[in-house]
Length: 213
Image 1 (cartoon, rainbow, N blue to C red):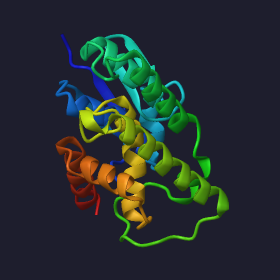
Image 2 (cartoon, helix red, strand yellow):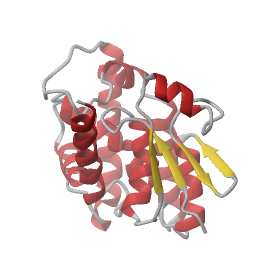
Image 3 (cartoon, rainbow, N blue to C red):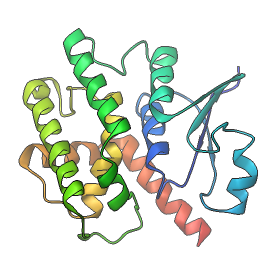
């Protein structure tokens, strides 16, 4: 049977692509990666053949195509992970889903003013009050989940799962822009940074930049 194909954008820039990629990689699900360089004529020509929205990521599995990062993560969880992408406990699972949905639909100011860019030299950026509120809310959410579930492991609900894949690009943003972190948030960012799958993504971003000049 052919491998599932995950169509993504540049590893340096595409935060939405990172989320399902990280989930597949961490749980060692074999897949074919199709990388399209964003904001290029090649992207415009090729994306129409993969994505009905002309956006990445999109997952193809046989004749099925699934778009939207969170929907892709849900499909991965049901098809290959036997539910391990979410916590086994009902209440914890509800919290993880709520946090993931908040990330999926919210934090617009943070995302627009601190875009993911792994080629950026670390350093602060000017942000407005809305982005500051987003930064504060993210850290408070992380601290709350870690305080309740930290005994089970270093991630938001103990073991790595979909909720961590959803917030991984935010952790990368915080590192790139030198965002001051509370202790719980700093520990969580360090745990993500040590994750082999996330290191693979960062190494892949470096290779892409070298190949494209």
